[in-house]
Image (cartoon, rainbow, N blue to C red; front, side, top):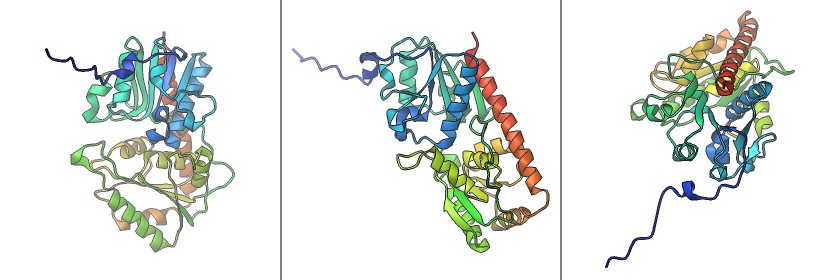
Length: 325
C-alpha cells in the first residue's frame, strides 16, 4: 500500500488564521511590502493624495503599509493575509500594473471585494492582471488615460533655481524589464549622455534616488530635488516631482518606442523630453542653452499649474470611482 504524500500546497495563505481588522476599503501599494517593494517617494505621495480625497468624502479606508516604513496615518500590517474577510473594496495605487503572486492571492482570499487600480501604468503584456479589476484610472497605457496622482500639492518652496543652472540633480531609473525583451531599456545610453553633459558644462552634480530606504526618508529625497537648479532624469516621477516644485527638467524616455515618461510628459507638453533611441549630445546642449531664455520662468510656472490641475483631476476621478455606492 502506497504511503500518502504529505499535503504541500502553495496556497498556505488561504489557510492561515485571520485575526486583523481593517476598514471596508483598503489601499494596497508597493509600500504594503515594505522596503522589499522598492517603494518610491512618488508612490508615497500618490497613496496619501488619494487617501486625503477619500477622507474628504467621508469614505472609511486604510493605507496598508509594512511596519518597517513607520508611516504615520497608515495601518501597519506585516502580513496582509492575516486580515479578516470583511473587506469590500481593494484599491491598488501607483506603479506599473504587474501580475504578482501576492496580489493574485490577496484578490482570491477577498474574492467578493470590488477591485480598483488607480494611478497605474497599463502594460500590453499584463492584460490578464488588468482584467482582474472592476475599475481602472490609468495614468498611461490605455486610450482613456488620466494623469499621475503623485505631484498634486507639491510647492516650489522658498528656494528658486538658479538660471542658467549650476547644480544638477541626476535621477536615473536604471534597467527596466517590464516592457519585455523587445523593448529593453537604453539606460546605459541615457546615463552616458547625461554624464557627458554634466562634464561638458561644468555642473555640480548630486544623485537623486527616489526610493525610500531605512537610511533615506521622504524629506531627505524631497530636499535633494530642491537643492538642484536642473533635473536630469529617466524617471517619470523624477520629471514630474521636479517640475511640480518649479525645477526645469530634461527627461529621456529610455524605453524604445516611448513608455510612461513620453506619455505622461506629453500630457503637459513639456518640450525637453527626448527618446533614448534618437537623442544626441547636441540635443541636450541645445536644451541646456535654451534654459537661459527670458520665457523660461513663466513656462515653468504654467507647467507647474498644469500638473497640479491634471493630478487633482486624476485624484478626484479615482476617489469618485472608489467611493461610489
